[in-house]
Length: 83
Image (cartoon, rainbow, N blue to C red):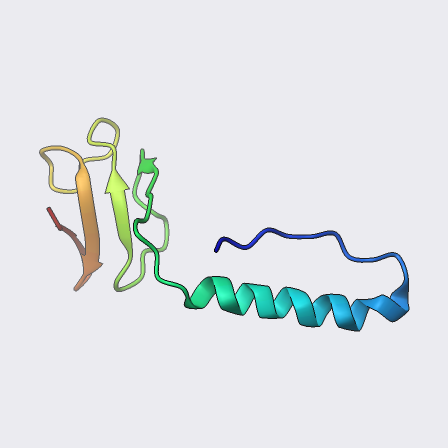
């Protein structure tokens, strides 16, 4: 299940019920397994990488390994090719 935002009600009295339902749907969507993730190719390194970040380098504008693109993880202060 994917979460889709719904506009809040106009009536302030309906907001608590709306928030409860929205939070339940968000929690449900976050707890379900997913069959894939999609990463957009990046054309430059993130400005503030953090340990464990995973990115898809485009291999044209940004080549973390100096050779080409692919999937890279940020570990020990460097980008490591994942595959």
